[in-house]
Image 1 (cartoon, helix red, strand yellow):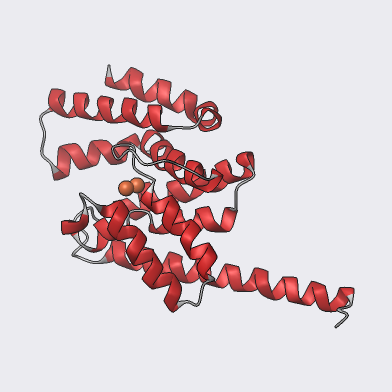
Image 2: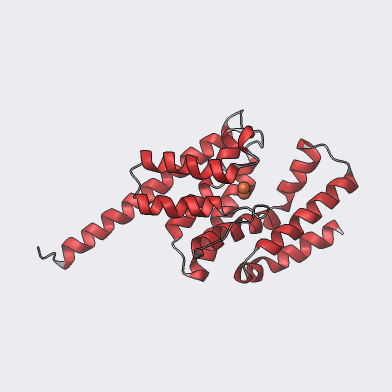
Length: 205
Ligand SMILES: [Fe+2]
Ligand SMILES: [Fe+2]
């Protein structure tokens, strides 16, 4: 069968529209989970973490030539398991990959793309040593750490308000977290976030 250029343009347009629709649905699912009372982090994990992970994942994808759609969906769902159920926090990279699979299958997302999203979620944590095999994995893991540095206020809120730490203890905790986050970032990401990292550390010294 011969497809003319007009038909091909229509088909490409339909695929792009479908991708946008799926991203919007995943965005809604993630944000709704953040609004629930069962989310022990509060809505701030959406407003001061996830949307920044999305922002930096897409920026990293542009720089590294990774798949923007995969990284955006993975960024939206990377902490989903711990938001949905606090019992999953310790292994949220494992449960998160499983939850992402369920959500994306229900949206008829292609299975080969689901596997890529799952890999990104599974390998996003600095504290868990897992090989980051693809450019998409590197983007999401780096973006997670970059979001912590960009939104250091979110870490301070969590330490002083949620965990009720004292001033010095909290300062040290956040400083160490920021330093661990920095180590996790790909060199390309470090160039993007270097100034914010320097500023954050100077406040926390
Ligand atoms: Fe996480
Ligand atoms: Fe995160």
